[in-house]
Image (tube, rainbow, N blue to C red; front, top):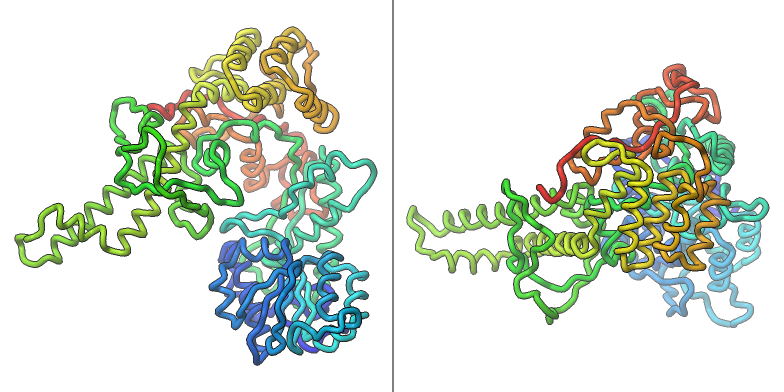
Amino acid sequence: MLRAKEPKRGGGGKSSKGGRNKKTVGMYDHSGLRDLTKKRYLNDIFQWCADQCDSWMVLIVDKKSMRALSSSLGMYDIMEKRITLVEDIERIRAPFTDQGAIYLLAPTEDSVDRLIADWDTSKTNKKPLYGDSVFLFFLGKISDKCIEKIKACRPLVKRVKCLTEANIDYLAKELRGFHFDMRKSFHDIYLRKGRNKIEGRMAEKLISICSTLNEYPHIRYANSSPAATVLAKSLDLKLNQFLQNPDFWFHGDAQHNDRERATLIILDRKDDCLTPLMHDFHYQSMVNDVLHVKEDMITLVNNSVEDYEEFEDDDEEDDHENKKPKGQGGAVSKNAKDILLNENDSVWCELRGKHIAEVITTLSERCQEMVASDTSGLAGRSGGGGSSMTLTQMASALKALPEYQQVMEKLSHHMQIAHQCMDKLNTLGLMELSEIEQTLATGKTEEGTTPQTPELMGLVIQKLNTLGDSKARFRLLMLTIVSQNGVKEDFKQALWEASEVTKEQEKVLDVMANVLDIPLVNRSEDKKGIKKLFGNKKKSTAESDSEYANTRYVPPLKYILEDLVNHSLSITDYPATRNLPESHASGSSGVQKRTAGSARPKNTAASR
């Protein structure tokens, strides 16, 4: 076709030989997704191109591929592969005719048109921008129409050394986490009128994940969801077509049977609209909920860790949220600094899944331990048994150490972020609000009692009247509606009035009712109090995972995954696209769906 040579590991696609080398890929087996993705970029694209091209090279990207690339790599990683420059294909660029060109693009018509414009000199009478070695990589599957456009550009075709669908069409944001960068997909999935291709695009992106992980998973899906059903069947079809690539292998095949095939389960947000509305006090959730974070970046005022009061963890109840940095009573005149909260921040990776109370305790202890150990180390290095250094001299010398400055700066950043979270918790009254949320979600108070509906609705209305922010009121109203499976007619008017529902918010409520199938009014005659989301809940070990009263709610996803791992997930509620192994198919078809949450009395954050 268009290629002279190809990488050994492209993951399949138009380049029929673009699979992965069976002999070398085994080294990646036990890495996280982000590490695997990074190695695919570095080895399968950039190193392979460097081996084929004698000159230095320019990397040309579009907006989508740049976001995907930067989620896994830094500029230093790229430059090591003889890439001198990274260029945006949408901008006017200077020519580098003595260098090769690597195009890493999203498989869209717009990007292909811009690629062709770089080489179609018939209209501009200009020379090509780059040298005679051109490598074309697309994040995902490219259409036949785009292929024909490329073939029609003869100046480009004669320089192309490879055309490969790289199958890396996702953002590897965390070690084992990813997303598809499809921020506007809600409309396509839930509000479309007539059929569109959203499930097909999502299936192609899932194949990228499977290709990177070397997985041919069993596919299960929520039977109650039309969207999940269509996506599961589309993925099953495309994945089996992808298996025709002779170079692709997967865990669980005849040659790689060290572990069994994975299971992919496709769920629908409609089945759990409650969890996103809850206030969660784990570090990562709280930072993204109450602070201003954009693209993993948060802006902080530069304060050193010494500016903060220590958070003591004793038997008395301390008001952590009332602690303030020394000298921060008014405006702070120090420079602001942008901090990236991503995989390159080891402190963030360690603490993001912990409760905010544990984060503060850990940060405080870490700072004290580092100062103590480094100070004693300096004393030892000063010579002899009796040190001639005073404590002041020792502290000054310690602060001059580069490693001390780097670590303490990182700890200082997170101490400041944690402080801001606790300050928001106090000023927004989130502790009291979260207790109402937990009672709504679990049907139990912190003491384990079941409140009557009038009592609970009275608490909600009272809280709504105290909330000054329109979004906060609407969030609590939505949470009340979802958790109760619609509010009783007797309380609807009072709740709406206390929430001061706007016209725009009315439209959101209409979507909840007509698209997400969440009734706004519960007209049932059920006298048992609070309506559970998923019927009666079986006992689960997940109930004992948290010791904090404001985190006693357990999302239904945890129970679903628990049953999946134990091979007891209902085949009726979560069928598979193909026959499952006997050990996987043991889930009883009569198992009732379980509710989210538990209501065991636990410690509050304030007592920590």
